[in-house]
Each structure stands twice: as C-alpha cells, then as structure tokens.
Length: 208
Image 1 (cartoon, rainbow, N blue to C red):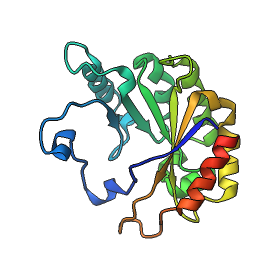
Image 2: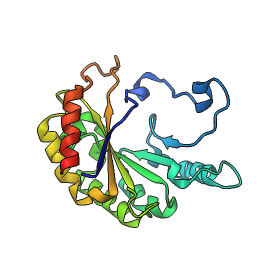
Image 3: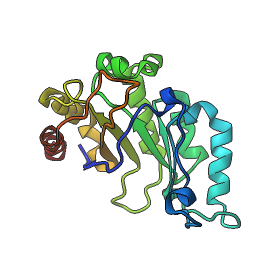
C-alpha cells in the first residue's frame, strides 16, 4: 500500500499534558537553519485554516524564509472540506492524514474526533486531494498516512490486511508512516507495539 516506513519520532498525548514542542534552535542549542516544517500536535491545523495557510505562504515566500513547498507538511485528523481545497490553496505542500486505524469503529475508539467524518468520506477527500495535488517528481508521493502503532489495539495482522486493502488503490501516490507510541501517564491504556509486530505490519503493507 505504497511506501511504508517506521517513523523515528514517537507520538504521545502532548495536548493532554499541556506540553509544547521545542524549536529547532532550542534543540541544537543555537541558531540552526530550518529545512522542514510540520504543522501538527496540539490543535487541528485545518480547523485554523486561514492562519495556517498564511503561515505556510510566509514560510515558502522566496523573499522571506524561502522553504520549498515540499519541505512543509500539514497534518490533519481529517477535516474533509479543508482537505478538498488544500491542494488548490497550498500547491506543492504535503498533506499528512492521521489515520491510526483501518476501520471507522476502531478509529473512533482511538481518536474521538474521527466521529465528525465517516471513513468513506475521509477517503474520498484524500482521493480528491491526491487527484488535484502536483507531485514534485513523476514518482513522488503526494500524501502521507500516519499510523501510530498501539499494542493489542491496531497492530494485529488483520489490521495490517485491512489497512493494505484500504490504501492499495492509491499505493503509487501514498506513503505510510508507522509511528512508535511514546507511553505517557495521560493514556495508560496504550502501549507501544513490539518491534516484531511493527516489522510484520510493514511487510504486509509493502507486499500489498
């Protein structure tokens, strides 16, 4: 189901703990050139659409920050109307969909915001985005699917099979990022999937 990778950065319940992410300068201890920007984490970027699109345009303005559009990614839980206009409003900017489950029922259990848009509507919006988006090269993927690997929740063989079936019609346009979960006391019910399960999951997606 497209290119599948295991993400190097874990995901945790940042919003529930009132935390914040450090800047590139803070992480390095001094001024560091910014090469990539991702809008995600606390708050839904596509629910703050006007501010996010304005920020992206500033970041990609050659007279200001001068980032390539392909170096900016906007992550969403799936705000369907905004997904449908994203490619026209921000051409070349990457869209990442936080999917995290291959079925509506399981997705709602992990992420209550998923109740707003049923999975068929969400996939329809993703398909519309991919049809409208401009790939950077003939072989470039035009969207990413993010999938947090949760032990005994969404990491079973049947989950991998269902996800592969859901995404396989668009394999040439999609990248799937399997993200390790960072445990937090805000969500003690979740645990990180084992490396063995993650490897099997990835193999299923790559073989689809």
